[in-house]
Length: 495
Image 1 (cartoon, rainbow, N blue to C red):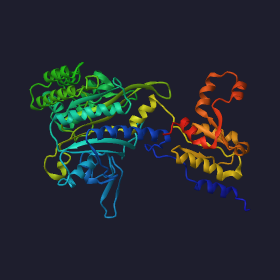
Image 2 (cartoon, rainbow, N blue to C red):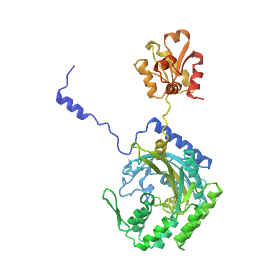
Image 3 (tube, helix red, strand yellow):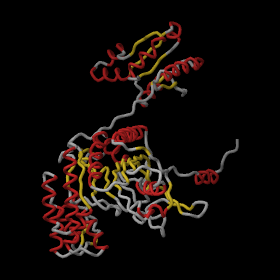
Image 4 (spheres, rainbow, N blue to C red):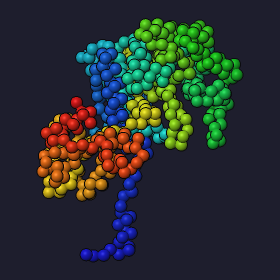
């Protein structure tokens, strides 16, 4: 055999690719996948009960169909991941599920029922800077109603959002749906004399930071600007003190009840047409939510909610997960927003040139799964493991595992080359509920030995004598081969 020289070895090492993961594209373990699937199933069942039908529009859309509110068609990779198709048209991975829905509705307007109620679940992609719990690829689960105007549809979406949070595992008091209105925001801008479009954007971004920075921080952002702990300065909106006072009165108007908050907001936005429309919207939403049994603790009016996407035209809302958890360093954290939505009456109109009112709600499944994992981390139960003690009996061991699978039990035969001790360690790492042991004695007697690993682990916690534990072998028993499936099903909880 030829021996490689030092230069050849170095060259081979240089040709090896580095095992590395692109930032913002997380690897999903079995536990994460199971948690996400459970959330999608639970939340989708809520949407189905409310009369929504499933729709998947596929991952790619033409860039121009995504709209001016998302990427810039002159810079097709800004905000999205785009490429040129074989006909040299730019296509991009979907940024969310709403823009593709608008395209689908416009394309199929004549044959779909109106209102058109659909839900969708799947990954979306954003070409943005990743951060903690902020990914470039993540799963969203949406419900949208197209072709219906008025706050009654928005109130329904808020009620659906509350029900979805509870279906996801958030108990009452562990979440809140915070509601505001873009009409109210327009009204307070008019009252405060904020007319310039660019300045309005700066003001809205400042108001959206109220939960994070409080009155002092927002005051700085509305004025000359704010310096953070690193020394970086965020340019302010440059408003006068009198303008800032009007806006601060508005965003601090939240009270203990929706009705009281609406009353305070009516006073703060004055008698502008937009403000009056927004207050009326909230009053009708409150009446419908009350009739549906959605209390002030589950859905609250919060004038600091802005929502980032510019296509919202009416009520907007965010689902906030309130339960606290500790991170890897032991710091107590609250996850914050895990979903949101609102009214968007202009998206379908981009294609058709006529009004098509719509409202919707989206849950960030990946973010919510991470929040749930931070509070209730549960390992995924592995398969029942059939140990291989005699290499010349592989066919028999394979048949035992097949019998379990036919009965609906998740099971595998050990295919490695290690001994019994290593196989038991493997079962432990896989979080197997039980192992099946068949050696020469068991085969001769027509029996199997079953070790209930869950019962053994529970018994081990109460035993202090290792010798007694080994002698008693808790959770281990023998049974005829004909009874193996039934006994394993009882341990694994299989139907």
